[in-house]
Image (cartoon, rainbow, N blue to C red; front, side, top):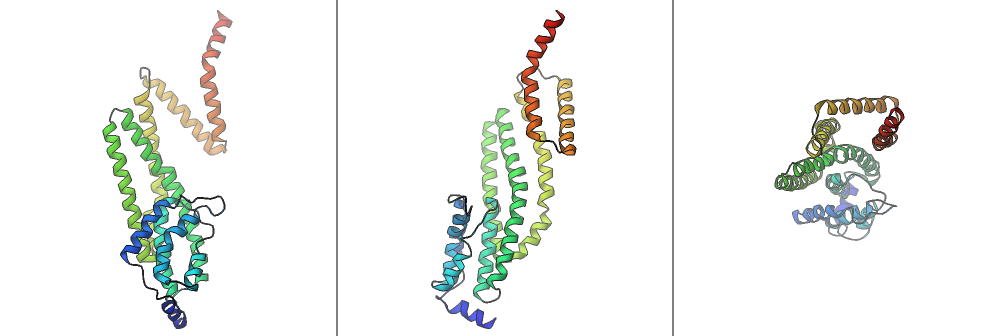
Length: 266
């Protein structure tokens, strides 16, 4: 271990990332999706974002080249988690440079961490928070509160950047220990709660944008019918796309069917 620490200190005059270097890495995470490709997914964006930190840690030469090779392979996770992962990676790289951790051990931990956060990110951010953001914005706009929708969107945008900055620094300072903090946040269950709120927002959008007179008993029947279909889909494992296609077909075909039945008994 002592030899590894000595090796990390002597190659290229390396040092730890400064605040300026960390800022450069964080800003580059905003463009992680710009180099998206079908082979490595977001690996080009990750390599671009972490490079200032690697150059600060390893300086130049073989240590830097080996460090860069660790980030050119396949990488794909939810973009909102990239600052956190980048902070973790930089913190771990400082330990590798000091000989406190082997690159081989980090390789397995890296893959496990990326894919675990990817699943959480797709569920919490992609399936809950972003849907809430869009539905709430549309509901405000449809209610004639366009200015409030704009303020809400700006507030959400800056809150997202603050979240990214916080997780980036927390990942850098705490390393893999930050994963225990994320577990306490219970994001999966919070995502389920947001999905319930999203369902209410959808009902609100229907209510404010409905072109005809609002009749509560018709809405109650529709809610019960859709709730029953949702239960059938969930328990029977039916395809949601097929159910939606049948509903649309029934809706479009109802006027024709009504006229046909009237003509039979006229």
